[in-house]
Amino acid sequence: MDTKVVILKNGFTRNQSHTSSAITTARTKMTANELKAFYQCSTLIQKDDDKFAEYVISIKDFVETLGFSDTNSNYVKDLCRHLAKQTFEIEKDGIWDIYTIFSRFRFDTKKQLITIKFNDDMKPYLLELKNNFTQIKQVKYIKEFESKYTIRIYALLKDYRLMGHRDINIEALSKMLQLPKSYRDYNFIRLRVLEPALKEINEKSDLEIYSIEPIEKQGKKIIAIRIEFGNKADKIADDCVKMLRQKLKRNNDNLSDTFVGYAYSISETSINKGDIFTIAKIEKDERDYYSCKDINNNTLFACMGKKQFTEKLIFAIYLAMKYQIEQEKNIFAELPEWQNQQDKIKEFKDKFQKLIENYDKRGDYLRQ
Image 1 (cartoon, rainbow, N blue to C red):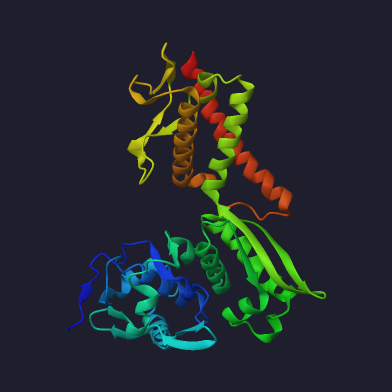
Image 2: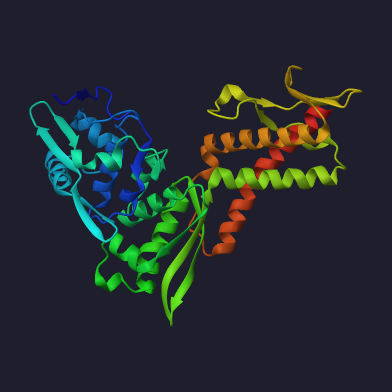
């Protein structure tokens, strides 16, 4: 059967990448730009695809989307030439398989077009993934990274996105990253790989690495580490929930004094701007039936019983807070280089406190 050809008239339009976890931990010698190109190309794959298509994109769109500084024809041609030779080495049960990633690159200098096709051997690692896959919702963060090691570490963390930490064997990491022998010592890895990756990930992505600590030694030699991390929006929203519960207790369980002025999401999934409302009033009738209303006196939700109402309210505020933080770019504007962990924590708390103060001021106004 002929291969389907997809003309990318608008360039790369998708941002989400799904790859097998085996890819995330595979050995590869790809450069930072080659990794960026791979992950961007992986966004072309649709969820229900059962075979690879050929994708045709203009050289201009290819270069602009990937944000390469060198846009001359020879550089792009060399990049495609190198990508066509790159491999992933995947180990399973003591057996190493080496896969060429792409089966075809065509560079048309007359029409200024690039044709791309993945190697069919990559199907188990890129198509119809049901379990054990790495989801990167915004490939744009990868394109911001300068180091190939940062890209690999970021993908490792995204693979454990629901865990909040990842334990990593130093020898396995060294082999995965194809580090030169001079980097195999933990101190070299910490200085040349881990600390630069931490800095880039914290400054340029949606993740926050909280700590990198040794967890296993063999004599004096460190053989394993744990990376603690989280989603920036999740962390601030979680802290907000803790603060709200403390505030509710200080206010003697007065719901209006605690929650009026905060944003509320009427949706639990696929939240957009139209789902966010400001809590203006909380009422209770003689039946112990509670209702939450917006500034136009529309009922956002209502239910019987204070405990159930409160939990529903806090969860909806959490969702709204998380959405607003993710949309508010200036909250995560580039931070200055932190001198130490305390500076980092202070910077985070200052931004968090400012956000909460804005909610409280709105609540004071609405309660007048």
